[in-house]
Length: 298
Image (tube, rainbow, N blue to C red):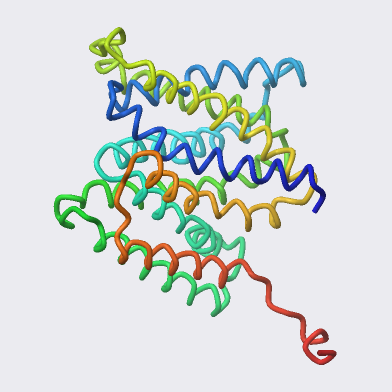
């Protein structure tokens, strides 16, 4: 992997990781959850629309792909982001970040259920280990579990939605450029966000939102969504999606650390142990089995 690829990949991991505490800061300093996500994706949709139109001159897709695109936008962006912002609002950013560490294992599970991939015994073990890690994160929270239950459930739901999106969008990725897909997916999701968020958007006291909260809002749009997606697309062109995904799985753990540093959140020993267990599950699931020939030569 060349130095440019390393820098781009590191940038993606850091920006996506920092987005967890940045989003929580915005939601606890003036922004209503739905107003935040609706405004964020409306601006992101327009930005990606301009980029895609400039590069490709069209946003058209085949009629046979419309239903799948709407499904991906609904589950992978709309439901995912509503669950995410409320999870971050209800529980700590570090906990939400650690729960997102289960995404690769959910991806393996959904791939198996959809018939795309048969899960090996090793990945089933990784799934069980990841579930144990998530339980440790939930029980290790500084707040009582019942008081934290809503945020925990929403964080796991958001991670599962992201995994579902990663699996179900594969046919679309094979037909359209990522720029066109990002533009269309965010456009469809934005329509849902703006409809759902209409009461919060109309009642939001925009003038009372603090400067740093506005800074967090724009960070969540441009560096964390638009720029990070462009960098990620560049990375997968250079080193491949499979190889890049293994490294980008570090982002949730960077997010947990960033929440401790930036928001002075408390990460208990049990949560830290749960994060390590989830990381171990990712290693088990993503590390390819060594070829028999190599073993014989050793």
